[in-house]
Image 1 (cartoon, rainbow, N blue to C red):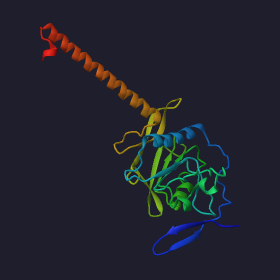
Image 2 (tube, one colour; image 1 turned 135 degrees about the horizontal axis):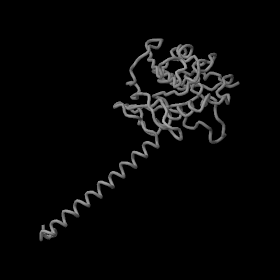
Image 3 (cartoon, rainbow, N blue to C red; image 1 turned 30 degrees about the vertical axis):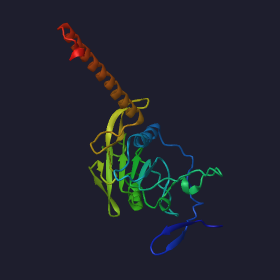
Image 4 (tube, rainbow, N blue to C red; image 1 turned 135 degrees about the vertical axis):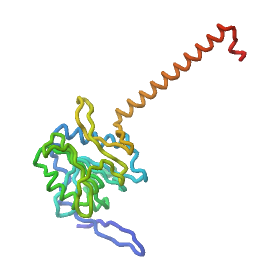
Length: 259
């Protein structure tokens, strides 16, 4: 079986490293997400960044994924974070080959060796006590090299804390109370409000440096509509005041056209 190669350029020469055989790896198993709340929370995290975040201040590209396998070793089972964010990388230009209509396996999951680095941030949404978010997964994500690990426990299945944040120190994680991630130019907090058709609930939301929510497309459109309405209202008030002033001048026998 032929083996494709990845080329790494460095001075003074060029090294050819065989692309690993990933034919035995499972990139999708058609297992559905565990519950509707988790699915909505994942989409809220992803959609708000796509619609309302300009990315890190240094302009690096980024990819974000939800419920996608994260492979860090050929013989290691994948992790499947509910959400991951990786900076300084780009997705495949053509995930599905337009000529053959095939979907190359190396494009289907987050393979650390394909992207060249582990994700910078991972979020896990707790559904029950079986996920191991504060045990096995905590150790696994540290082993992978993830920079920030966020655990959102909306039903307090693991304890009294709804939100726990871990930051990387050496080869392990250390819990922190800091909600701003300077290396990513992004922050996070709990927020109670309506999302899609659901009434107000507690959600996990991204925030900017000033602590303001990164808006969803609906919120951004609502804000734009509000600003447009305020502009129309201000223009109408300006016309009213001008007409009132002109009427007073005329009543005083002053022709505004001659001023």
